[in-house]
Length: 128
Image (cartoon, rainbow, N blue to C red; front, side, top):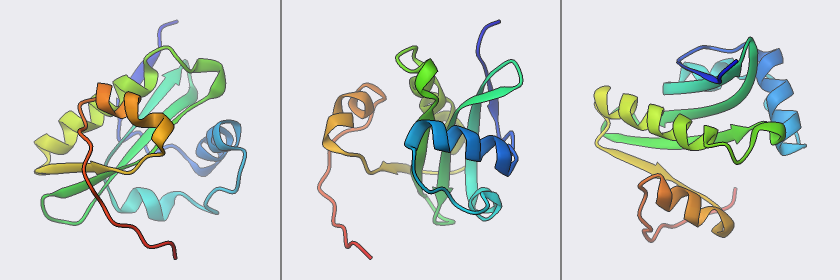
């Protein structure tokens, strides 16, 4: 069965928790509902009924949107799933009024985000 992609699927906490744990092996939000409530758009990748990829775009309520939590289950990586998810939410964010899509990433992910169309910019960060 081919991978399917869905805009705004609103996966439940159990689905997201399972994916998050498999992909990140660290603490996850107690509930993803507050995150999804602030989402301009999010997308899921599914193998049948199983959530195997996820990405979220938050918005400032204006023209700035922020790509967050690009996640693919380790068993499904290197198949273009993350690239497809980013393309899907990029198009939807544009259609929903975003003028800029920002992303923060670690240096080893620079090639991936460049291939998705992002260009490098200078940015500031304060660890809270």
